[in-house]
Image (cartoon, rainbow, N blue to C red):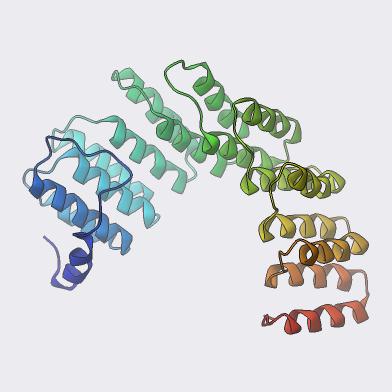
Length: 308
């Protein structure tokens, strides 16, 4: 049952493909359309309507439930997503699948519930379902959001030991994220080495997490060095990476380094943004270099940026 005001949202869905999970060849056209409608509701943030659409469907299937679960996760209603997973198996009598477990595990990240994600992973294996890369990545993501770097590393180890699948770049990057939150630079360095050994090219996210890790570990010099390592590897630092370096300089009260980083941003055609200038201005103000702060403020305006 969908409220009339949602009809415009549903109309836009009909020209869009179903994504993020596989559709069964046996799924009827009507159910495919219903799944697409639920996905459209999710994209519009209408998670309650998505739930209503699936629970009032007499003959709902797993794909419709997964779409509704994803709609809840998108709206940060992770508990509702898990309720749907339980309802699917208990009331609708629909057997869980790898896709439904993956969706439930992804929802756990929204609640910072790494414990539930790990529990669901064990549960699905107990039912004879083989986790896929996306499933494992969801568990690692939940661990990363909860700051549980040890569990994230353990799940990555499990993936590597599984001969039926291989971690992807996201797998390694998410472990780097988990390590960065706790400043675990040795584990991050090992993960980066494993990433490269697996044949992947570190990207801005990979390097950015390394910079954050070193900053959290009170090693600002190593954070600065990452910028040089990126360029040597053929990766152009984006503004987010430069901003991480500026924050490291701010933590170290290093005004000289701050100004040098700002200059590099222009040299390498990555102009500072509002965050860059705000961080730099805060650093020089703390050093009581008010004249420099005024100059930076004016440079910000000259660059066409509006101060907060």
